[in-house]
Image (cartoon, rainbow, N blue to C red; front, top):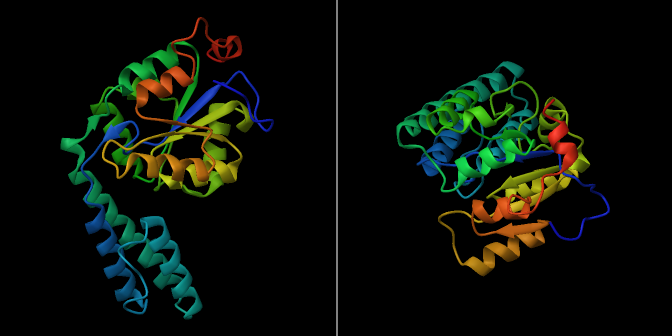
Length: 250
């Protein structure tokens, strides 16, 4: 896996994956999801025009809540906004389930990692219902030990505490883990949690060089074109598995 950052230690014991775009391909209508969050936020009291469809969904939710709080909105108003926004996002996500497929190489990668004893988790901005059903439909569920989603209690990605809680559930120290994702939010979360991050390029991306440069700038220890390359970086094509990882399954 190349030179090891002094903050990290080998062997790697666990790998945390993003879901959408990384392990599965799901036709989420993200523009519609953003529009719904903005509509509900403005109906709840956020000034029209303050939120942009170019923002990420986590950014929209956080900024809307901050503005409502600054504007003196009652706690009940803020709770209702969160509940309505979550319900709208969940409904749009579930529409994509029937067309959700495993990303090329995902089953082989997780099968190979699990066989070598790696503890595998999923950290996603999707709902728990979508995440579990997507993993079941794509044949990935048997390999995943723990999941943290947007709808679980407590912090959600990109809050680094979400990643640290998932690693705690897996029994993996942060310096013995790798986080894998296809979005800069994944890189941000890993960097703030002090977990090494491997980027896998999106299936549908812009200029290749630009994506690689942006991931590198965000702190990625490696940037792979596909999941097969991620497997090679984690040693699946190597001569032997990390002994401590094998022991972790006992």
